Image (cartoon, rainbow, N blue to C red; front, side):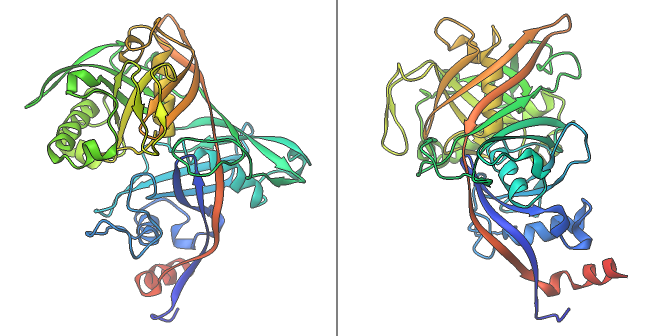
Length: 402
């Protein structure tokens, strides 16, 4: 390879839910990046444009937010119970780090369509018209996601009238089931074994929290305990550096309490998990789009943080955690629900509302979640060749070709 030439890789830029990411078929990656490790991360960081000390991703495909700094690798699954393998990476903006520790629930909505369009499924599974059910193996967390994708004339249908708050335009509805989404290896989705805990955060005090690992490790707190109403939008918090520092300290302390890391230094490195969410009873508010949300339009209010900032809508994996905690009595979420726990609910977030449902049951060992369901949408925005400077990877290419 000429040092001045670019390395070209087949890629797609896709919106899934309220997120966007760069999607790759595993077989399209250069030989040096097929296996996980430093070489692959180096390539994907350059694709996204990280690290960027200016926080803009001007020289890459990233959008410089937690919702748009993402990469996905898809391949046909070798599991007899699944059609596709799905690996997700959350790319840090200001540091050379990709976090592979969790899933992206929003981008989960785009995986099946990508696999179908790239010929990764048995053609016999794809109807001429109707819904194609695709079983996805989520490699980061070793869980199954079932997607039902609309098909018209044998092709993935993207146009439709389904409206998803946080997305400007309507699209076709995609149904998602997150099967057995919780980490219940110890018998319960609650790492401590309790639906309610007290979390001591030095310099900030003690908080009543629910620590749950379903969809993604998540910490729920009462908004009023943090000095908020629960109706806040991004600008109300993301411009307040002291508030962001407080939430990050809570996140790091919770990550230790949940057994995700052993100390504060490790917690600082693991930015993607756990998620922090503050909860309140229903209130009237104006969403970020200017839409009025009435207190009777929602069952509960949730504001969640991702990668150190208040999210503009709601992470799909956090929505799984919300649905799970709402179905179980005694959690911070269920305490805010009128009438107690609900297996189906609508919650308010900064961009609007979202409906979710969960099937949870109490076993002899503790609470488990069998399934969480929700609707999302997805759209292919661009496909073609993404390019990175060849000089950065010429030695890796030469080594892989020997």
